[in-house]
Image (tube, rainbow, N blue to C red; front, side):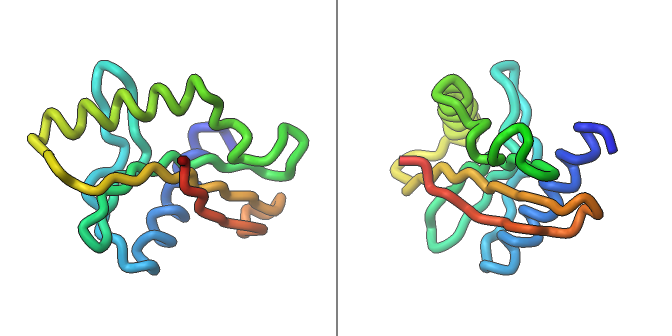
Length: 117
């Protein structure tokens, strides 16, 4: 499986997870000239920007460890562009990392959502 395919699988699993928690998906793969956000969702009037990281095994570390300070800066910039483009003001915001660990057969070993503070 290519990294792109693994990423798409992870995003599909994350979307399913968010829907099970009664989030409403507003955007998926939101792109600007600054980059991309994996999922933008909303629940209880809180707009949530989600970065999805998926790994098979942990030879390269845990998925959430791939979200570096540089990646967070990127997420914040793209989120700000989304807010400006959609004229969203005075909204409660959240940034989440959805970390997905898969078994070699692509079944879910662990899926956890972490809030970035």
